[in-house]
Image (cartoon, rainbow, N blue to C red; front, side, top):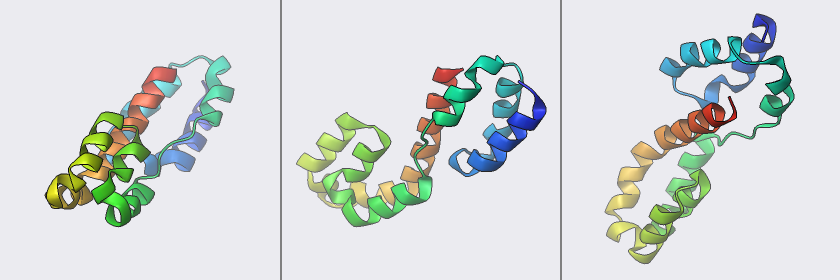
Length: 111
């Protein structure tokens, strides 16, 4: 893939990934086939800021974990009311990183 497409992808979607992952993403995309460009543009990433807002509002019900795709943890959080509130507070600090990790996994699965 040419560097202009790679740079435009990183500029448009850089906020969905950790800062330390950007270099690896650039290398992955530069080595990717041009035929994957339409599928790459169609990928929908989870916004870490939205996941934090959902965690603050509905974290005790596990909605934040359902949002990022952790169905098992979402069910456990729902049953335990967010671990009696403790798990919900911990997730306020972890959920943005989890969303970014899931986005990276989704990108690697495509490439």
